[in-house]
Image (tube, rainbow, N blue to C red):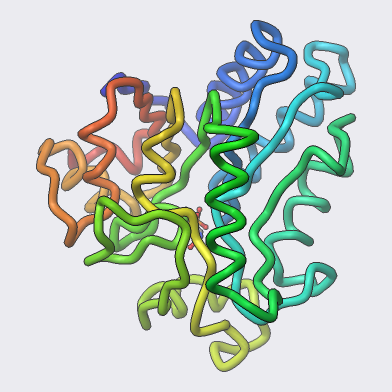
Length: 241
Ligand code: GLP
């Protein structure tokens, strides 16, 4: 694993942005695997600024998002569809028809998972997958105990994940209990992976990741199986590693 330690969140966001811009400049029809959560927000802001100043062009880019809450409509402000439109897709010239996110409102969720996995095969796999990490080591919404052989599936969110994400909702009761997520095997199909971690609340998870184990009780440790992972971590998240 290639590790880049940055002074702070701003520098982390700039580094991640550089990686993505370099990818898109080298291959204009790149497939980007994208993530939600608060960690990539700074990266998306940097990408927007880069786009405005002409440093990258997204018209031929495709994107595949990791996950979506079950039961939330695309226009629900808490949905990951809404998040991506607001924080990235509306700010760059990506073709909306080239952006893919699982449909958490699908009437047949099992079929939706199959359809999305098929999309990953047809459009992807991502040339570059951006990832955040949950405090319990989840990647996408793959909670501890998820098989490393998993493809896109429905997951029951753990109490700790619902609590951690409650800050985006009016109350914890509003946080969905399930999500559609790319599986660990789906994520590992990506050619390159950039994992972001910021803040001391991620320090324990990063410390565990860097022990190098591969253990299904800690989903992010599957990344230790992949040959092209870059961890961009700020000092607060790295200090105990
Ligand atoms: C959510 C997302 C993950 C993300 C994680 C961490 O659960 N599904 O993809 O990595 O939160 O979020 P944050 O970056 O806000 O700490």
